[in-house]
Length: 476
Image 1 (cartoon, rainbow, N blue to C red):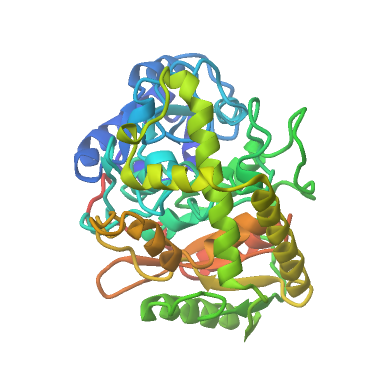
Image 2: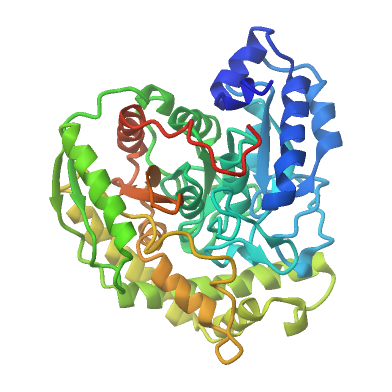
């Protein structure tokens, strides 16, 4: 079973399908791995072992792409009926959703067996995973450092070998950031590629989408095949894919025109190691026959930050106020972390006209970026402005409770752009610094063109494999 733990989810499902292993055996082994490393990394916060064992011992659909494969669900976003969902907040420490989300149903229909929920910051507001309620998730590459956020629990769990892939979602980079910090593949799909139903049509004007972090590119592609597609009542949906994404893995990407940047439109200077990671990725792409040149779309970082903050803070108000009836009490400062309440108060000051102006800013930005992609197939940037910081870097200061949010604007200069424009983007683990910490390379595709990203990702994966790299804290 230890050898099996090195396989990706597609390979595990094939073992189940061919009767070489039983789902309950895979599940028990995953739980054993979780018990081994979770005390060190705090990736799992809500075990669901009894529910999962019942599912693993039930008849399975052998035609499902991930039949019998153990899986983890982030404790933010999709609901799993009957299982506590805290969203990293003491305000919701006793909240138990009464129904499944559409995505949760699709994951189950794909054959995945969810056996636990993973750590997240309060309401996913920060690019690190260090909530007061759940405690910090710790990076398996160095437990003194951040896993990134807000899907940091999932990133830590996959990096440490508990599971080959885990659910994640992304409103400002929260799939790509932990993928970069934890040395994983993380793709944010095109806006509305994965539905948010049955309750929500979109979140924060379309900023948020769901998918996963994984060790292999093909797992990500096959999972998106299983979960993508509109449902009745969606307010809008992504352009239909031409063929299954799994068919793009290994397909010839052709001669791609790739623009890369090591500076603007980042509002602050980038860390030299983030620059080195981009230059390394650009050189590799050139070696593979792609046309690489330095360029960037005309994005005003101050304009982006102002519009994003307006939508982010007002979205925080909506989240808290909408959940208050389920918490059974009115929100007050003592029930939230300092920064969360500060952003709540800021959000109350965002007028309807200000919100509409922010949406219009994002739409103008989307048009500018679309024109840029008439020349370039992909845009390559650092995933992050710096390597994974130490735990506590984003804590509020006594004289500046907003310090963490201000620092996050420097730390994530690029990933929020694609949430604003709706484009697909991915972080690829090609570079580790001298301290053994991974630093992702970030590729952005045209709206609706995940296929191009999967083709290039598979080519890069073959040229420089990363799946067998193991961190110091590993269950495998």
